Length: 272
Image 1 (spheres, helix red, strand yellow):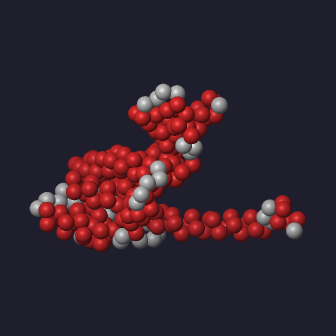
Image 2 (cartoon, helix red, strand yellow):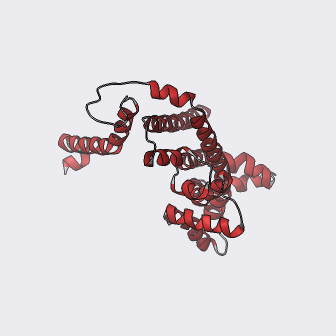
């Protein structure tokens, strides 16, 4: 009884620590293997690695093909992020803030695309584009990513919308604020942490998305689509090198997001 009141025992803490370490090893061991493959001079990865070289990183950074892939991936991810956060913001207000007829049905339908297998969703969207006579390109890829990612951003922002007091908006209106002023001065600042989080999720989900990109980008290519094509045929250590650079960029973006949230929290604490 005393042990349950004072917290886990030393043995329990050690067991939890070992379990957490094991989970991290399982998650990140494949990434370590990709990192070794990116610095190997051999065409294929084999252990032990006899010759190390960082030349592939130089080739990746100097490659026009990789530069075009990054531009396309970044363009798609940025558009998806902006549009999905806007859609998610207003969807979250309808999802969590207001009570209206058909709200529960809207909640179910808004989240439904999350549960579709992405390959099936990509094939369905490709057939839809073909039926409309639309040639697949990076623009149709943006639409496809939005279909799957917008429900995610809606859900994330809705969680934040559930947590704030609607009386704050009512107080702003009582003080003479218009609907637009209330939205700008009260609603958006309150939902900003959820919007930042949703934006990070949207960018990373779009940046690394393969199934939807494979079906809906046509002749255009993003990094995941190109990596798959080169793995199937024409493999060189440039493939894991580009993969590691992509992971490093994603990690840097996550760190930047955490810094933004931390700075915002510090400012709010200072203002309080």
